[in-house]
Amino acid sequence: MTDHSSASPGPTADGMPMLGLGTWKNTDPEQCAESVRTAVEMGYRHVDTAQHYHNEAAVGEGLASADVDRDDVFLATKVWTDSLAAEDVRETTQESLERLGVDYLDLLYVHWPADTYDPEETLAAFDDLYADGVIDRVGVSNFTPAHLDTARELLDAPIFANQVEMHPLFQQRALRDVAAEIGIQLVAYSPLSHGQVFDVPELTAVAEKHDVSEAQVSLAWLREKGVTAIPKATGGAHLRDNLDSLALSLDAADVERIDGIDREERFIHPDYAPASW
Ligand code: NAP
Image (tube, rainbow, N blue to C red; front, side, top):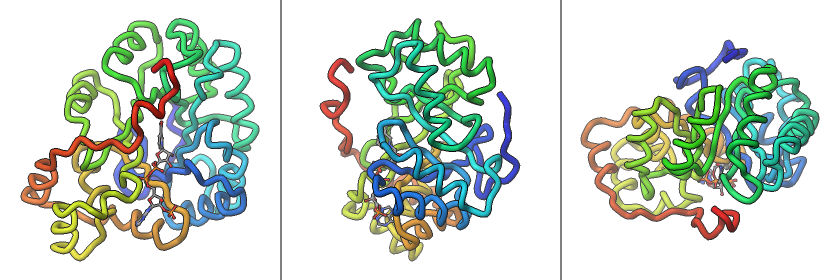
């Protein structure tokens, strides 16, 4: 694994900054480029996109216009489920690089193990990209423990991370144990549950105690669990609020209170996933 990055405000997990910028639904090119530029200049050092978000070119534009070296930003994208045949993985990754305006990726994920996902074929292509130095790390997303077992058997490269939905309303207790046992990072998507974290009494109580937002509490709780979070934010105020979560330390009572939330409410329902998942 090559680690190009030298600057990383906030803690890192095995070289990956534990706070990143999500970009799903940030499809207006100007707004997307501007939010990426603002975020990176504000201090974000991890940006998450995907072929399926149709914004890689805007993300690349935002990165290029920021006054920060590309090597100092941890950049991740994902191969969509219609492109997981070996040749398509290679071709579409090349297209992603061109859209993003970079010559390597810090992390490339299999977006969902669905549709054209064929463990042997797909993962062999990821191994090739890793061996060729096109990608620094292999990631998977929306993988169950069974998917992880199969992938680990087939891949030569280590699996670096599994990106899954996680926040205080969907705590991924079992998957966290699996990730710790097999030594892979968890990256939490929808870490603010798309805004639902603002409506959880336990989070509001902790937020009021520290005079911060519920978003910051949610992000600090994920970090306390050793999980990287990639909240999507568009404007400066949300970007700043989320970045400021790095200064929030929760105490044991706060963590216990949040751990006790037992709601199992996921924002991305499995129904949303490609049909064969
Ligand atoms: P999220 O980050 O939980 O929530 C985003 C929403 O919260 C946006 O409407 C945003 O508004 C708002 N927001 C952000 N910061 C805020 C703050 N401090 N105060 C109030 N509101 C705030 O949801 P997400 O976009 O689903 O997840 C984050 C990222 O994870 C995605 O963007 C994507 O990169 C990734 N993801 C991956 C998968 C996968 O299958 N691998 C699935 C879903 C998401 P504004 O935009 O107006 O700032």
